[in-house]
Image (cartoon, rainbow, N blue to C red; front, side, top):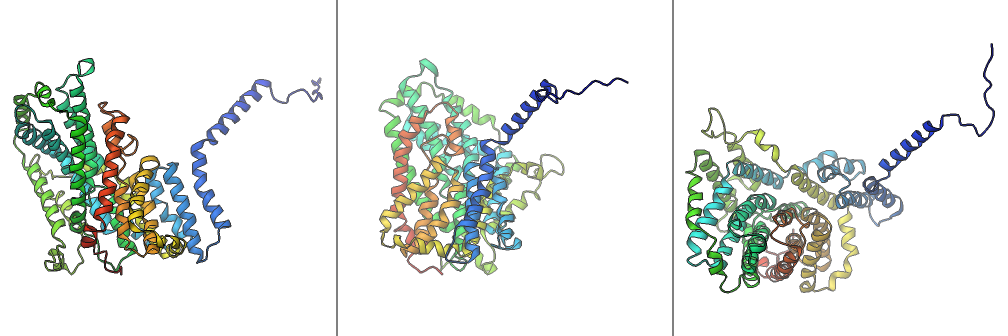
Length: 535
């Protein structure tokens, strides 16, 4: 039998040439899919953590070094968003036990705190408000009846119209999350602006007023959100960290926060309204704008909403009841509030979840057996914010229990001689800049507040004197459309440009920093009792 001789020529390929090319292309394709910037960022967290564990020596327990390494890992993932933020927020649940920082049970408890219960209950109630279009009814009634029909007069009074629109946005934002308020209020604002001409036919007066309305809604939402604990996640992160670091100190209740934050927000709001009027509402603009606003049409639009149904009335009643319970749990030392009936065991989160539970019990009277809410409607719950808040509380516990807090305090001793009047504005500016350029305001608060607590200890000042300017300052991201989701929603309307945001946002940021720097060592001392030593 004849056999074909196998070539012994070394130049002869063992595989056909096209197979080699295909394999080479497949290899390069696989390599490109692996070597990506996102994968590099994924590896960056563990890599930095390993470097710190191997190379960094701290004058303290091993747990403090491990906590620093885990902090760098988590913040690397948060800042680069290599892994979705909610998943990164859950990483302390496995990193803390593996690195000997705290037990699985201890770290898990941070993810279900009274502050998180407060947030969860208020979110469920906000979903009910959105489901029954109560936000639209409130906005239309307040914005179009009270403002356009009452305040405007004849001819139109643009400053008063702006005051009403901005006031509506700020009020709703006090009780609902900023992003949800922006999504709900922007269609109301653009609905008013639709009556004006667009394109080349649009005069400078009309163009400026359109910009003023969008900017007014956009930044009033941020200002309103800082007034209450439920207005934004940053406020809850701050309060949760205060409770975690100083468990024996008097807690910051809903009413306590309101007594300081509402006057601060009111001053900012009035200054902001004045800025809008000066920059965008010229004299005589009322006559030009009156031509396009038909009051009879606005009345007709309100009539189309019809009377309030039973379900809407019940949701509004529960919403009002919750606000009253929040405000009266702890009032003053002489008037302790209803919380004393339960020996201080009930918190703001207690009543928040209780009211949310009523939504699943009370019938809606729309269909037989239907309740005001069901779990199907709760699928839109923002678990990303809830998990981020839990991670912030877990990190605060870890920094304190591992001994890293004491080491940071010793490292920052050089700040002892720095006057408070110099450090407070700097804290506001730095935290707002981090939100503006790097990450979300929630992540900024989680990152910066533990550091501010140690700086306060080094300066021998009450921690809240820095925590509150740092936390609220993180919300002063007024310059860029990408700084916050609310800014993006406003920018997407097409009525404003980046230069408009900078034009109004920069002076507003300066006003906000000045208000906080002045009120914190004055009103803040009285409300938060910062003259008393921290327990």
